[in-house]
Image (cartoon, rainbow, N blue to C red; front, side, top):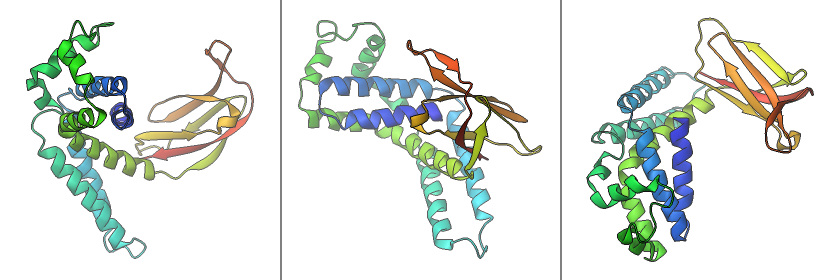
Length: 237
């Protein structure tokens, strides 16, 4: 889910730009999304998670401390995401595989220099169109991916908001926390101050999480930090 979210974010940024090279990498990103979304169980897993979230939120109805209007809005978003994803035929982007022109680009885009004008003249000609024409084509090709993007946005938004952030301190660059037995956490969020110039390296399992604070050396390699530091930690169930 996080990989797909990253790719959809990149795709949105690239599609909004003007140059042909940006739209080339937007097309490459579409193919990456199709590859990541090719897992047979991805769609069913997302639908099950949407149903789980809806059932959990529906249990708050009648709670005087919960706004019914806000609850209805969130459940409505879940319903729309579920319906859109459920009506999607096959895997995300499957309909694009019948487009021979796109598939000819997909087969060569991973080859270094494989999309040069003398290899794919039709693709080179498409890159000479004005930006609006290319954006229209990209929007048409990504339409079959949007139900997946919406479902991911809803689920990850709910998941991230499910946790309560709290400030913790790492002694000598390390922080360790035991997790309560019988409770499952799906996501851990760490927010660090950019001014500290530290990179968190996270490992864990159902009973414990360990966060090591690292620093980059002159060549970009990560080295353990021995300094005390504080950061924000959120466990999302």
